[in-house]
Image (cartoon, rainbow, N blue to C red):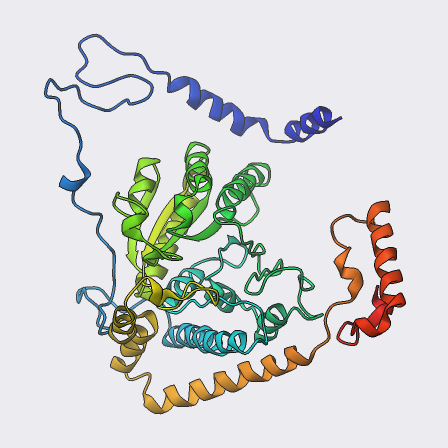
Amino acid sequence: MASSLVGRWVARIPRRPHAVLGAVRWNSSISQRPGSDHVRFPGAVNSKFTSEMTFSRPSTMTAMPTYRVMDSDGVIVDTSRGPPDVPDEEVITWYKNMLTVNIMDVIMFEAQRQGRISFYMVSAGEEGIAVGSASALAPEDVIFLQYREAGVFQQRGFTLKQFMSQLFANRNDSGLGRNMPVHYGSSKLGIYTISSPLATQIPQATGAAYALKLQALQNPNNPPRVVACYFGEGAASEGDFHAALNIAATRSCPVIFICRNNGYAISTPTLEQYRGDGIASRGVGYGIDTIRVDGNDIFAVREATKEARRMALENGGRPILIEAMSYRVSHHSTSDDSFAYRARVEVEDWKRRDNPIIRLRKWLENKGLWNDELEQQTRNELRAAILKEFNAAEREKKPPLRSLFTDVYENLTEEAEAQRQELKRHLEKYPDEYNLNDYEDGIKGL
């Protein structure tokens, strides 16, 4: 049955693109010609022969450059270039989105310490990567995230109510409380739900990008779409990362890999993670067009992502890797004390010296678009809006108990139904032992 279904599906794919791909494959056959001064083996076709035995030493190679548009003082570095190709009002929106995430992080971190939520992860120092890259993506693009990209959700229109509903796992949470806090998701915004296992989203993103490629072959008139996949440099140490990049490269998938290199994988600094030139050098090794950008420079991140999207859609699709350099100002999560493995003065220095919010604020001030009064007013307004949704979400009822069993299958299996009935019997037998008032419809919701 499965084979016949696959056969019918393949039969519906237009024949011409496959014929062209087949022709390219046959025309690329390689043989070693006599007298050639280049390698013509299938595994390396443009390497010159040499009689001098030399091992390539990474220590002798120049590190890949880091692209930036403005310096830490908010000044455009290349004076010959014009202003950023976005209206001032849009830049101010980016700034407010970064501020929103930053203020929410402080509130929710404190809420976890008070025992009002179970877990939280802060994205301080990396807001520019999330907001800047998201601003360059199209609404129809598909996104896979890790767990430090609240700015992507904020930039794409995720509401404060949606953030708080998920964090408090109440009945308004689209996941009905079945995910850990900060594991957001939104089908409306084209963002797959975040999952905890490290790097699993990377091969998933490659697969989704390959699906988009096939869909484009079937329906050339559909709007072109790419997949954007975010992860930290620690996730790039997982095997999933390497498999995903290799598949994306060999199948020419329209996917943008965005690596946040923030210096630490929980307690492991980059010096103990790898010896190569960051993550960008790995993209080159897999034959992927790659760029390294200053993650504290929102303009550089946006420009790189915008160009990466254009390139990813060229000639049927191809992967692009962006390594965005930043510093993780916060602890890894509320379960971590980063001062156990790094100096407090180092963190404080980064807070004062350079981060994406301070840098963009300086740019706005240099243009006369921002000042201390606007800063204080905006922060007060954002904090009030966040606390309003915080308080409402905290008082909201939890999802109905039945949601413990639903959404795995279209209909409950016999085993799941038996478990539901047994839970109901147990709760009815010991009503004084369980407070079900916090759950929608109480025992009736089961």
